Amino acid sequence: MGNDRDYGDNLSTRLTFFLVGAGVGAVLALLFAPKSGEELRNDIADATRKGIDKSREAAQQVGARATEYYDATRARAGEYYESARETAGEYVEATRERATELYDTATTKASEVATKAGEVAAKTRDAAARQAGSISAAVEAGKKAYVEEKRKTELSGRTEAAPTYTPEKAM
Image 1 (cartoon, helix red, strand yellow):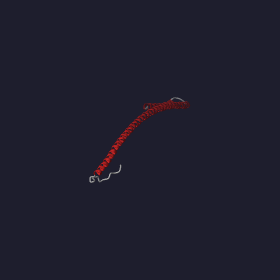
Image 2: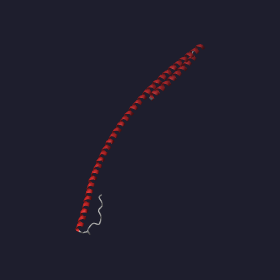
Image 3: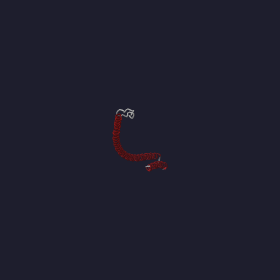
Image 4: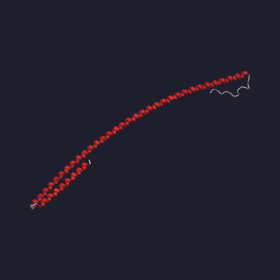
C-alpha cells in the first residue's frame, strides 16, 4: 500500500511539473512569436484556457484515482474487520466449549467426592453404632457381675469383703 501511495504522489508531482512547464513554454513561445498584439493576446488567452482545461482534467483524474484508492482501502479494511471478527468468534466459541467441558468435569468429580464422603460417613456411623452396642453390652455385663458379686457377698456373710461404693444408675 505504501508503494501505491508513493506511485500516486510521484504521478501527481510529475503531472503538476509537466503542466507548469507546458504553461511556461506556451507563454514563452507566444512572446517570441512574430505576431501582432491582438493575435498575441488571443493566443495567450487560448493557451491559458487550454491550461486551465488540462488542469481540471488532471484534477478530475487525480480525484478519480483517490476515490479508487479510498474505495479499495475501505473494502480491504472491511475484509480485515470481518476476518478478525470471525476469528474472535471462533476463539469465543472454543473457549466457551472448553469452559463447559471443565465445568462438567468439575461437577462430576464433586459428585463422586460427595458420594464417597457419604459412603465413608455411613460406614463410620455403622462402626460407631456397632461399638456403642458392644460398649453398652459390656456396661450391662459389668452391672450384672457387680450385682451378682454383691448378692454372693451378702449371702455368704462376709460383710467385710463387701464393696464400699454404690453402683451408679443406668447410663
